[in-house]
Image (cartoon, rainbow, N blue to C red; front, side, top):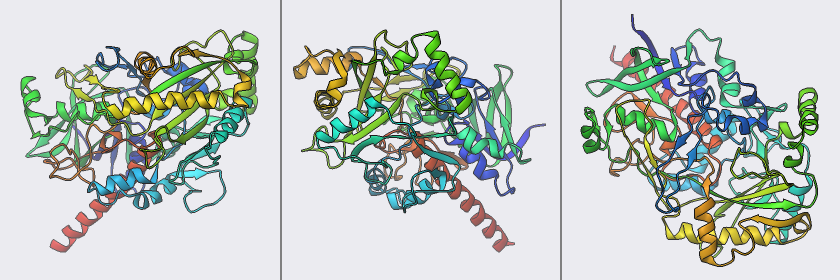
Length: 546
């Protein structure tokens, strides 16, 4: 017999775990949460600095590769995405950021009623327990911890002081809606452990009789009857496909890469491309897979004068054992924090940007790539990314096989503004690095190297070494029905069909100014209320009729 649930949630990531908790909370509805990856039992998921170990773990990470990017000297890019309970919240860099007030006000101005900063702030507060003092913008009783970094670091302190001398104000809280400033980040950790959405939301709900969690199940497509989503086709570990039925809704939470892929596999997407692959078209939706946005990080690497970096701590068995024992017995030290401790939101092009247009991640470690082998010298990394890129990429379905990834074309630095911002951002990094007290701790610029000085040379460095900072978004954007490229409405319902929603970073019309994990949790909290309210209204209407 086919299993039937009220709600089927596809993807147990940053959004899916939230929805699984909230939709099963009142006990009225049966909920099935589907995850393609395994359970989150790997120890490196739970040690905050452990994302260096999960970055290339094929069991826990989809490990996508993009197409050659014509704007980046034909380079291909490695795009990690979580493939385990918690999704990318189980393998990310733990930075706790909401974005700017203006990001959400812009969404509302585009016609998405209910998505302004004032509309979203209650959900940001609802989701968090913040260890900073009570304030109107902070939450104190939510599932997800916003934890301040307890121990200060000499390098990070120097970065903050040097940035202040470049007229960037010091701030203790980046999440009030106004981000402008420099300081220490807060992290999604608790008691020295990572707090993924699997830990914060799913684990407390796992014992509910009305919640079923299926891991290692790959969803093939959404099934329809007369334009109504009635269930999904899926398989377990590559076995024979079978069907689960949904009485109320199917909710896609598979992320900015795979939610659009599932829409297209289900017949919702650009009709000519679907027909070419022999997929029956449910709705011609040309916006599916378009509007791809991501933050491009430019990593400037410096040699440090003192052995105070993670490079030094990870160099010998003795030093590794020391920090390992520190974490094991006290849940403190480098393993409990992660790599990027300090940050800033400021202006690379102050005459053009109305709000901070770049974000810094200051890491007390250096490697040729994020998650790579550390350098043999004492090193640190100052990473900078443009917050609101104008460049747009796209996804293309390559096969009817759900296990075959989509083609990803990021089109980084294809827009003139993005190129100019990148050049100005690198120059800003250098100004801060050449200002004391940070300059006193740095020996030399390892990459790109001070000989790279002209705009053309800096832009070439950006094209040769720029990489994703893991924030793809926008590929099933929210918008008004009059916008041909909009995929979902302001209630996150897919246009043209019934009983199907998308709840993840793919619905963002424009990328938020910062890390995407916490905004996705907010989106899911808000979506849960929308879905439950819809069901309540439907029940009232039925009662009125009878």
